[in-house]
Image 1 (cartoon, rainbow, N blue to C red):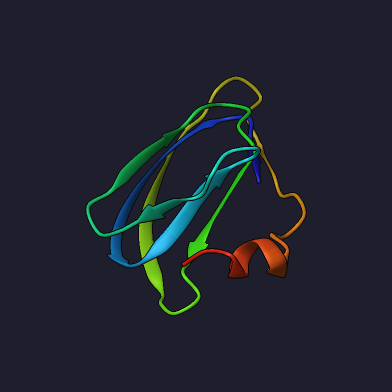
Image 2: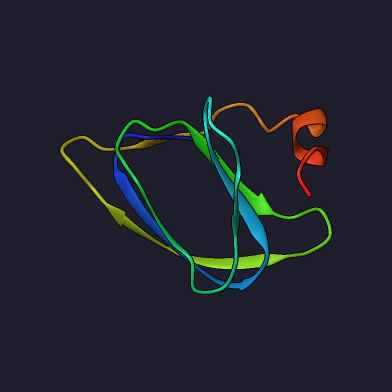
Length: 81
């Protein structure tokens, strides 16, 4: 996913990951919050042995949109603990 808007995520239950393109994945747990700047390519999802739930707040800009990109490949996903 690539944002043309700013997002704020609040993770509320379960366990998951957030990863920006070219950076290490960050484990996310209930109460964790992350701000995603406009134009940042990233993914987020549940850990392989869990589920997760989050609240997303989108801060739209002028002509903002979200571009859904390729899925995370299995090799990268299964490297996560």
